Length: 445
Image (cartoon, helix red, strand yellow):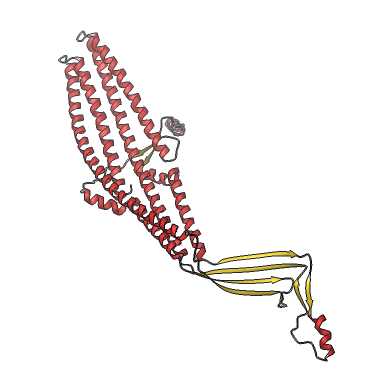
């Protein structure tokens, strides 16, 4: 009999474990797990990564003028007429008439224009001195660094947004819990009012007020649950999912540091600062490239060729080496305009970098102030919730004892609900402000 009960219990537990998940069940992740998912599945981050790959590809394009260029060619030529000189047929009788043998090395036939010829060739060109190309490659490298730093800024912003969304969803969960407690209190008050009305200790109006309060709190609960679902769905979309997700935020770190220290840390760690410096260096490199275009360029090349018909040398193959010096003396003003463009771009990059430094300093100061304000508001909200809970408990006790009326209970419960909601929102605001400060300073999550 005991074995039968054990078997039935095991089958029940297996069926319970194998049941499909309810529609309201939400997958819960830690913030670290969510950040890893963000790194691998965020479409915004994937787009930013593609821009980095494009910038790196441009570095390869800028490097190509500094590397040897190798080419192979082949072809067939068909001419309308053939022109050739037979040296042995022409000069043979002359040497025979004077009794002299033909000189050694005398070509047999010299083809000036063969009727048809197959040719193959291979060539290599090696740049020896190309000053402007080195500067252009350096500019491309700096642009790639700027793109990588911009990717870091996008990543930091997305991670901060995820942390803030997690705190907003956590606040929404607390609001739902507060609404559920308010519904329980309202139902308890309704039952107390109904019991006291049956005993003739209160009027029917108290019961109606209690019924109205229950409906109102149930409506608040529905709205709170809808807000929670919306917040969780926003987290899912941020992680590249079309379903709601629940992320548990990390505790708020201690950020009790002077604003001057935080600003200095931000200017050292923010990827936007590194991106601005890289853009300035890129503009300077382009300016240098425009100036170096005034210098000559030196290159060497080698070629090997072969044909099924002998060349004028009498050989069917050969090679060639050349050294080329090119000195552009006038290019229609391109170098001057390019230098002016790069100089203007550098001035704009420097101005943007300075404006960004000021913006970062203001952002850090505002974020630090928001954290301090959020901490103080949380402290006040905790006190308010404590006093409201004591007042609600006192009002419900005195109402049950017949000392106070239903209106006092409803007012106390309403104040308790508002205090609980304010406490939940204060916790969420502190988390959101802390995440904003970490992002402003450049700290990773």
